[in-house]
Image (tube, rainbow, N blue to C red):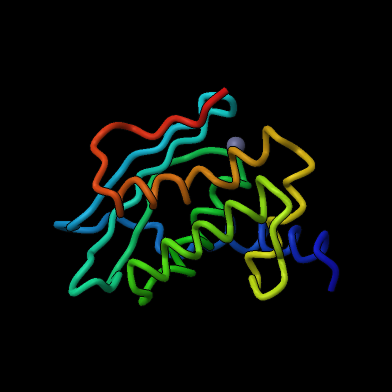
Length: 146
Ligand code: ZN
């Protein structure tokens, strides 16, 4: 399956049945992200215990790419340590915004194609930036830059 097919399948799957689209009661970390260019909004909440992401959920609304990406992001970091999740953020960001590797990214490689579309990069990376803000315990809302 090439990246384009994988992309279409992933977007479809995750919009039909998003993973971890839920409210987390009493999260230990939470952050809100907004992409004004497209109108995407996402709230990411986590339960971090002993440096491990025990649970993660997202809520919000927006385009199919932002929703699928948030769904995949939560599925990718759940059960990982905070430092593993940070490393995955760096890799994902490098893959979509720069010329980073998409090999060894598993199904996340589906998003590698968005790097050709700068506006879509913001949709795909919003939930990841919001995750990072939550891990950094930054209180202000994440807004993708123009
Ligand atoms: Zn969007």
